[in-house]
Image (tube, rainbow, N blue to C red; front, side, top):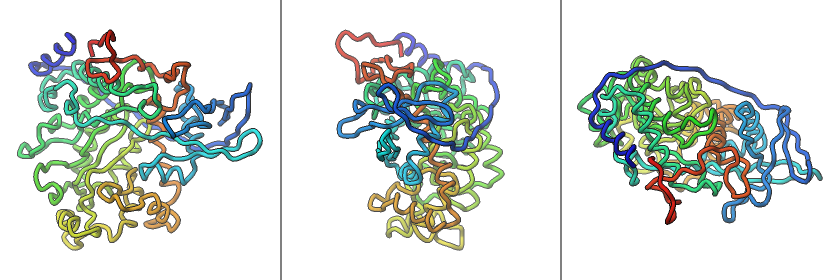
Length: 438
């Protein structure tokens, strides 16, 4: 508690010069051959020469069974092969499920050649904005940036990561993955913006350094692969409007993106500290940001790929009158709407590298079927490879969160190093439990 109070005071008061560093690179992998076998009574899966145990019947959450799911072994050098194994076994229907926000189902043949299926968890238990769910109330990001102190921000981010981790039990597969939208990387170039204090300011280099530090604290230093909590950012990019935001239509040029918004994202994405983001209501060259190249840009520069989501889909003007009103700010000056149908809209988002195929605000639409139809008919040129590329980072994130780990005799992830964190915000604390300085 003393440490947390000290950090809060330092962040609020400190306006001192700090130091900084610069960014790294990206990676991509392809699938290989899968084999299954039985060894000493426990099912295994061999992929590209690497063997992974399969989950027993004990792996379940309530009525949801994960029996048969390959389990991650904790080795950083095996992560790509493990993820490729899962992606191969869930197939295109599973990739589509991920894009539609649904748990994918894997299929494999057991030792008798019989077809078996298993569920794969993809839920990240997220908090609201920093401090809104009862966590420590930190100074806003604009004030944090004025410290110029990346070491201080990393310490504060670590405290917040502890608080997030302690809220959900790692003994349950479905609650192992935790995260929050924090370390906002959207450039703040207009002080008249109603959301100005939510960002680190207008300097792209500073934004990247500060966001990387805070998110790095959330991820933790005890592993090269596992994350204590999953840092994501939101309203990337051009989310400048506080009021009338559904009709706002904030627009920037491609040059502005590359020199400010994209530059600010390079370090945290390439370092793998920020693993995903929520896109905004904005426009890029009069195209809604949900369908622009920024998502492909993010996927290419990120360490392990990024998961993406979208805020309210204001430009869905073809849905009903309310959406038609909201879409007025997304006109290009000629066409009132960017897309003519949900099918076209969904295909354009996935082609752009956006994981969420248009689900927000359209509860009655079967998004999975819409994506499948778009793939089968190659709407806008959409292919299975496009779906694979965008779905894969979700499995990477779940593996790095500890959710897909082998479990020990207590039901805890066997290799995940962040299972015992408790804070004064922890839902796991019992009488007599000692809260950490987190």
